[in-house]
Image (cartoon, rainbow, N blue to C red; front, top):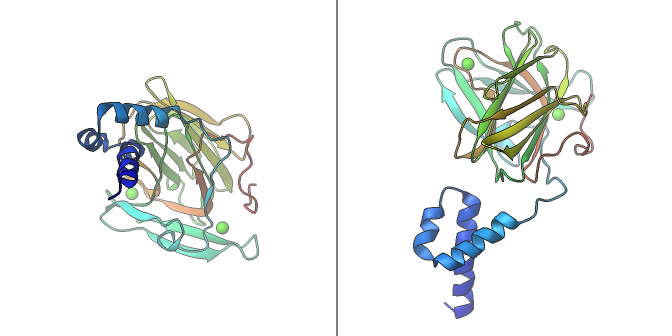
Length: 258
Ligand SMILES: [Ca+2]
Ligand SMILES: [Ca+2]
């Protein structure tokens, strides 16, 4: 190994470890304290990007065939059924229909790992409504999100109940109609500030702060509830780990947002 490439690795290690979040102790044993401190300061001081790095799931294919791919997590007992269907209202558009069976402890979530930076914040948006013939108590929306420090979960039922589970704030919505939800997170004093915007209204429908800890970085959707079951349609999902972008920042072009 040349001196140049060895130096590059020694500098890169703590940076990679800091980005991974949970591996800082490994870096301590492989590099000097001074090098680590200066690399950590570089990461912490990195200015937040000003534009989103949108990733898009279009609903054209099943989540485990999408790019970026979704993995399954929180799966217990009987699995949910995911189906790609034609949109009856928009020619050529496809929708992910997600139906989980009633019954205690049936769970199933489609999961995406992301390199969330709590200080920068995150943005997660999707268009959803209840599947036809959905009973009132069924889940229409179930999205959990974790930034490596804290987590929260947006839950909505067809009968109109909408809540941020960990922030413990509630609102109402029409679960039978299409709605666009935009969730933003950002590090706050002792927790994670969460705003939920509906239909791109600039005033959030829910605003709270979660102090529920989580050391992993991912979001997942579907049926994360034991007793509840889901009967949802998702048109698309988009996300960015570049910051907390409210409705003043447009969503990617080509997505129906009404
Ligand atoms: Ca369930
Ligand atoms: Ca779609």
